[in-house]
Length: 591
Image 1 (cartoon, rainbow, N blue to C red):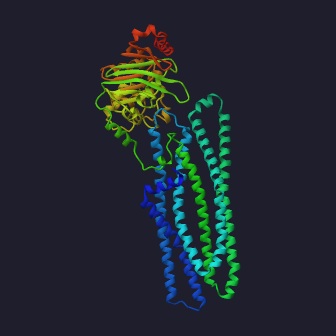
Image 2 (image 1 turned 180 degrees about the vertical axis):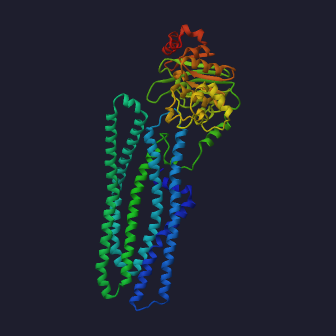
Image 3 (image 1 turned 90 degrees about the vertical axis):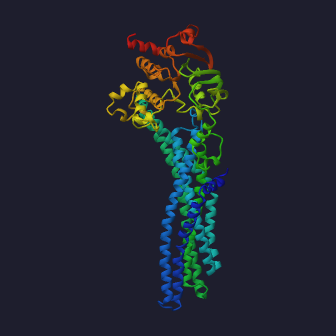
């Protein structure tokens, strides 16, 4: 889809509102022409010797009415412009975020988080500004046509002579639109680099200080900021200062031509004083129209860059049609999937020949079979890079599998990302992602749960003792990304978030990595106490391996062993060597 079609697609999202906006802009632009017309008629009547008669009072009433009508239309157009701006920007952001959520959850975005946020905010606003500007130009076009018609009715030759330079200037600006687009693209790219750098700095403050890199990082931020300043300055000089210089000069040239030519016209009586007033006044509006039109063209080119940048946020092969499509909710998509998805409590989750290769790499998983029955604890283990995390992500749909089948209670699951979600399945990654807010906010994650549910989840995740020592309990603020909590506390808050909705299947990706041996032992004890919970976990810890109903060993993406820990321990190298973390924890625990 071209940008032109994308722009009209945005208009078709709400044709009534855009029609109202165009009407109000036309009224707002045409009414200012009435005073000059009234004044010119008044001058001509006074020149003819007419006094302050009824006709003059009528003209005065028309003048007052035009002013009031313009004020009313101005208020209306500003209000509708605000709606246009917010609705357009909101639609672009919503559609882009919806496309992000439709991606497999574990696939990285093509751009950094800082750059993505910059595109969602600034570039969506650029497109919204362009839509408002387009409506303004519609009104300005009607104004220019009305003014040209009136001027031509007075003197066609003079109209042509004063208007040609103005339109010539407009053509000059139009021919430079490619340069405007290029400079704007470079300035937006530089802005994105600054945003990305700042986000990385804020996320790694401690590491930067420990590496004594404050000065180097500061210099880099300063360098990127200077590049952004230079590119933004060049873009604005080119698109704004040059436009202003050209059209201010053109307006002055047109006014000068009117004065020079008006002298001879006055002598032979073909032009009146009122006509001169009309020409000088309307010339300003026509010049403003060409200025607005050329600026709108520049904004149109800039919006093309912004639309492309928004479209590139998600590398899903879609074009601008997906960006400007009618808004849809991901929940609606998921609900449609659930209508034909497996239902009922988990009896058995099975996977056959699961295969996935990371893009640009031969690493991943290859032909892995897996069975998890209700009430079981299945632990996946293996060396670094064996494919453990990849297996879990493919199973729950966070990565799109290349081959293989997944079944829930014997029914094939085509889109696990829409099926293996709460209350069926819950997942905790290696590094939990906590939101700025309270412990309660992170546990509930917006779910409609009771206090009893929260207390039960805190108990099962072994978080209850920590909450008792926190000054505000569940209301304790966790800070950005959970920075006020220890690693173990953050892991258990994430586990409580899983447990609060009592899912059928719990999927843990190495939750024990931040837990000491005693806490982990208690965690597994509580989870396994009633035998009702089904768990699939990645772990190297002997505590988890020994309690597992089945241990799956991966090596280079392939399943090399499966069975009870005590049955396969001596025959599998990955299990015969103790985990260093177990040795340290055992020493600390005095075992």
